[in-house]
Image 1: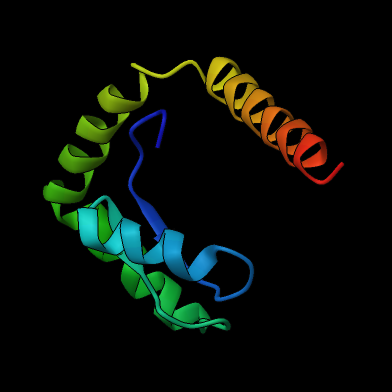
Image 2 (image 1 turned 180 degrees about the horizontal axis):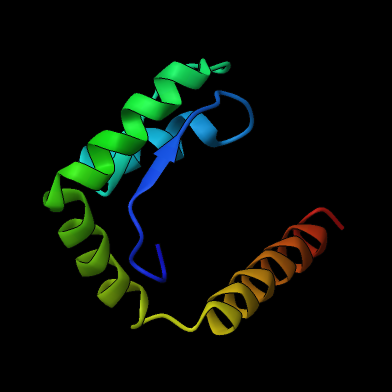
Length: 94
């Protein structure tokens, strides 16, 4: 999403189901809704994304939102929060 390219996604493991649902909901791409899409399914979805300019417009708009975030800074903050919570819980259990 950072570069503003619409997506065609599939899969259900790990966090894919949630991520793919968000992609579908926001209109930045097509969620095939399956773990094992057929080549035909992929081709139809890619053609849909290429033919419908709304996907590109929404992906580019989302790209602008991504520009506001420094991934390293966000990740660093999350790690610090996890360590702080771990240390607090460790102190509470003593």
